[in-house]
Length: 292
Image (cartoon, rainbow, N blue to C red; front, top):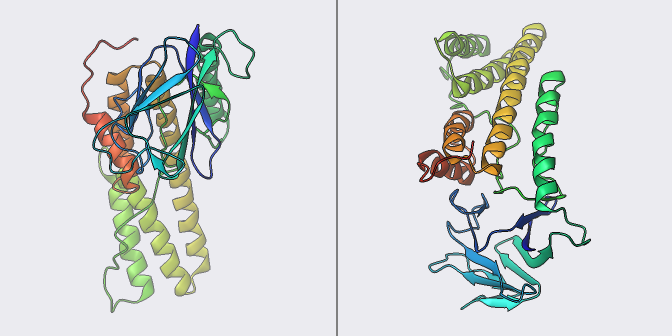
């Protein structure tokens, strides 16, 4: 059996390789694509790719109405291309397409091996979350049969309004008001990730003001409180990202949509293209039964 091997290279990251047994494969930014690339340079639907009848070559056809064209070198792809290996670009991203035998010894894993590896990896990652303050890297360089590329932030952003409660107030007074706001947010019944992220940011602002006022002891205490809150947020956020990956890999789009809604609470309005991707996923009702 010949699979379609697609390698996605993003500047500053390890290349990712994906194997698809069923073609054609729709590639784009939309979560509904078989290979979904959450990057602002990629259109909602970028191109389709499949193995030609001879099993030795690949055909890639661009989708209409692209803002950023799919190119080979400096030449836009028009009308499609066929070749044993196609190296294309869209913005700063590089896409490589080639046939891959499931049973050949070509350095890629078979679909079954890929599925086995994916079943083991989430278990190990959850153990790491619960057992230690592990930092997850969702950018593996090894081949995979995962459904999508999800380029989400590594941690929860802190982005409060940065507005000071009074321009004429002394630093200690401003710090007290900001800290009081933070505590009020945390005391709300059912305070969610966004409230907690804003509270952590307000605590850090409060600590900065106290540092200006020369109160080093209280500055350290509030910085530590903010760091502890941020650390807990990051761990729960990364766990949700791990769950999202698992649902996407299994094509459980209904469950993935629910997790996407949760992740939007963590990210707020930061990182526009990641938020847009999650909003698309959260609002997309599954049109088929999930494969639970």
